[in-house]
Image (cartoon, rainbow, N blue to C red):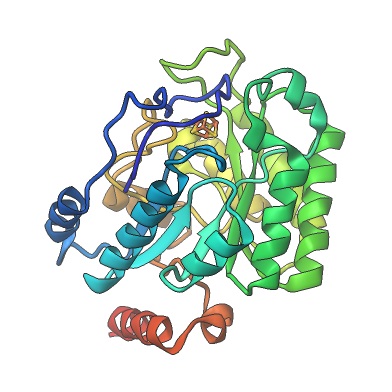
Length: 306
Ligand code: SF4
């Protein structure tokens, strides 16, 4: 679900954003209709992904309230919400914990060099600001997903530094359940003319991540961004264990549709793997949730085990 595509940042590889004021916000009535259509279709997770309203804008509070209410609505209709809407204040993050079973924010890359290139007009991409989000999520005991965006101008040592940073923050708080390794794949509306991150290099990054990150952190790769199935298989061999959410549309990479889950399951089975559903919160973190959220999660766990 996308509360709004408007975003005050302008990352030059973005295929998602609209200019502030140029994109109507999702109303609760529209969201209610969208969600009711998903009932009884086996959908577990509602990912709330949004462009950002500036923290000092007079519209920030409305924007935040809309996100909160959308998560609450999804929860009331039986789904498990996971919100990823850019940097939040500590209080905003604490409030959203009450209506999300997990949350996320891509760290992307720690090198400040990107602030002179792809992130020149993206104040939300200051690495220290994003790292602080990971710290706060840990302090608040929010099961968290983060990740690296690969091929946006970083070097191999930058990737190592980013992975080591995630490992370090996880060792402090124990809250990172998943790390996404997302290769840059050029889209049709982005400004930057950079190349795609080569599919054949992805397994090497998976291997590196597996060496650096603690074993309990799952590595996720997006199958719609890995056109070459041989390379996808190599990523699994190298330690990737999660293929992300498979939904009607990849909002961040709209030029790359998700594979059909049945086709993906067939292919995986043919190469010796099995596709199994998971919840947006890993079992190790159930105890971190409020009794209300825990009951919702348990209901899904019971449903999947029958
Ligand atoms: S990538 Fe995210 S933060 Fe950057 S412009 Fe697009 S929506 Fe905004």
